[in-house]
Amino acid sequence: MTRQELVDLIRRKKSYLCVGLDTDPEKIPHWIREDFEDPVFEFNRRIIDATIDKVAAYKPNMAFYESQGSKGWKSLEKTMDYLNSHTQGPVFTIADAKRGDIGNSASYYAKAFFENMQFDSVTVNPYMGHDALKPFLSVPGKWAVVLALTSNPGAKDFQLWQPQLPMILEKLGIKTEQWKRFYELIVEQCLQWGTPENMMFVVGATRPEMLQSVRESAPNHFFLVPGVGTQGGSLQEVSRQAMNSDCGLLINVSRNIIFASKGRDFDQRAREVAIEYQQEMEVLLKEKNLI
Image (cartoon, rainbow, N blue to C red; front, side, top):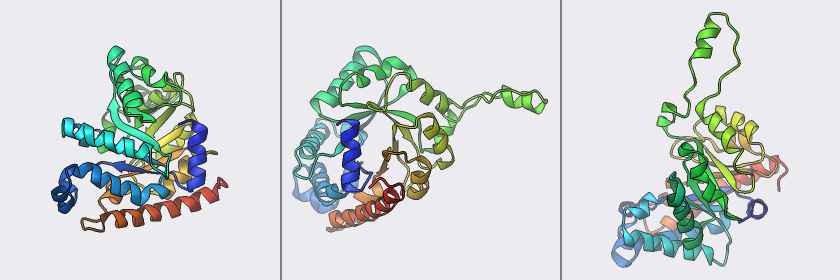
């Protein structure tokens, strides 16, 4: 999916909601586990049918499928086939794989997700540099979604790291230029390799005070934003800090939607929660005159 197609999709659906298909087999309603040969796919199918008219993107998290071995991969393949052929499609699809290898390994990861699975995008860890991103940036109409500033508590261990020397010198009255944090360096470097047409950044909703600085560095790129919902991020605050002239956001919500109910109404309840998010997004898009 091209950037313009994604922008048009968001405007048409009045939604920049991404549903994370973090389908934990142990949390699937027991009657689906008992009644269906492939309960993961059946659960996904019902979630998709219930939400697709309110959703711009879906993001299967690979861990929940890889952990099931060949059975899990089959569930994922069926889920992707279903999404890519759905009558209410197309939707943008993200393989939440967090790949970060180099050379042939990176090329084959790109082939696995782009060619064989037909995903639109893959989350990529940039730690090993350009080599890790290049294969994902080389396929027309496909995207690398680069981990920049994540929503987890451990992000502070590396992503928020900043050299101490400037602060020490400033305490001594010696003026220095502000040295950047590690996540800022990641964004600035990656901007030299990708474009707004083939690269997004993961920027967590739990650090809204830093969203604006990332947006200033990457004014035209899309952000995939986790952390709204269960992790406590604010949809309104994120949107007002980081929305650009084309929206430029995909807000991921996983557990709050797909596990909104444990009963037989789980798909209907998922729809109700998705509608709540979509309606709030519609208001925010209108505020920016985007619809």
